[in-house]
Length: 150
Image 1: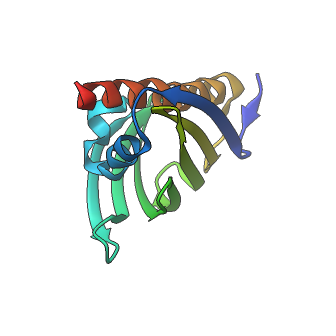
Image 2 (image 1 turned 90 degrees about the vertical axis):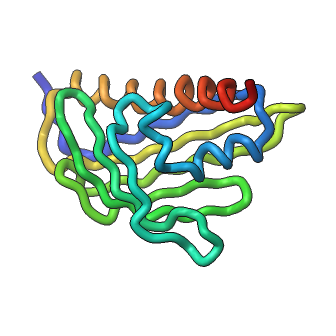
């Protein structure tokens, strides 16, 4: 059995039948993450940027049988949502980004996630967590966009 404590990188790209403004609105509504992202159990905005967008966010997540409490720093542009780990129980590093671009009447989304665990886990569990992150990023976001446009 292989155990990993090295960084895990996950990337995916997909299209959603919703304009970029709707996708960015969903991403900016971080307190609603538990509504469309299964692993997210709680999300709370601790601090905001001057424009009112989320800056510091507390999250509680459950994945591969573990609960993690995270404090993240968010940065925003017109078409990106980026977050970096400040502190967590289970992670030593996390960097994530959604990049949203117009594609016809919809959006093209590029999702990237880098995670470094504090503890060693079996390779199979790390791969399962990676797959869950990618599926949530795609399926959850698509379903939430569809719900908001209904």
